[in-house]
Amino acid sequence: EINEAKIVLADAATSMLHGPECLESIKATASSVFAGNGAADNADLPRVQVPSSELDAGKPVVDILVELSFAKSKGEARRLIKGGGARVDGVKVEDEAMLLQTELLKGEKEIRVSSGKKKHGIVEMV
Image: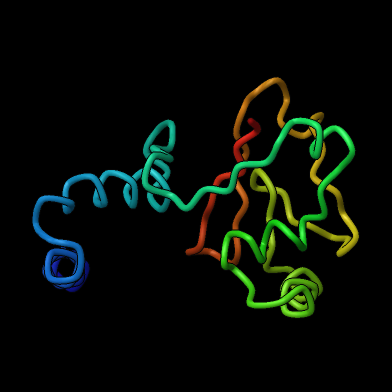
């Protein structure tokens, strides 16, 4: 089947790029993120740490997109938001002036930020 061939190709490319010792960890992360298999394994996703004081005051989502390298500039991050490609905790970011605040974490220490369907990262409150 074509999908099985794609998996074999992706595994081979991943092994060549990251080494065979990283393959299982990367496969587990990809499976949880893209296939929706239970709770996502966020260990291998890019992270940005934000002090709780910054989140209490509110940190612009535009800045977080740049820090996670999902955009090269704030302007590019704003265009991503305008185009409907940015999400925080699975919810589309509608306003380019949106602030990520402590309340959005719902008592957790981490929240997922996504750019499009395939780029995901974690904002960790420290």
